[in-house]
Length: 102
Image (cartoon, rainbow, N blue to C red; front, side):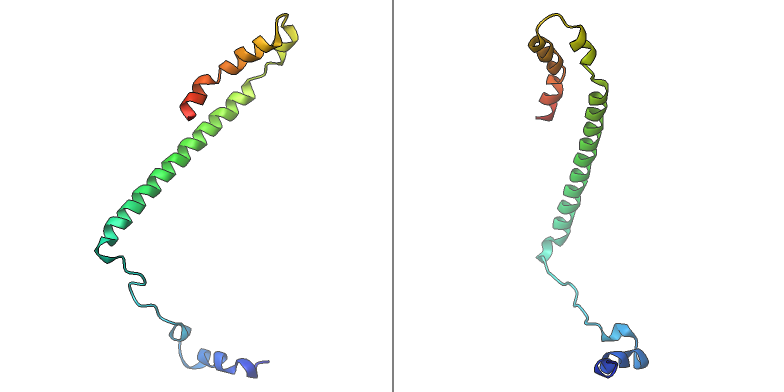
């Protein structure tokens, strides 16, 4: 009921809501004198992580496009030789990419 919450509702009449909120002392957590160095390292790590994410996205797009273009069905239908040899040859196209990734 409203009576149960009258103490909370009373702050709306007398003072700004912000004054009822708890305050936090600055700094909330002290990292000694190394705060700037730690912050710089964190920012640098974040930039490297963002760069890696962009590289990964580019690689993923490239692989999706290669997959889309790589249709060996016509080769399978016209092949008179060993399917194993054909598969080995087709898979070898991706050897350089596998080396780059690892």
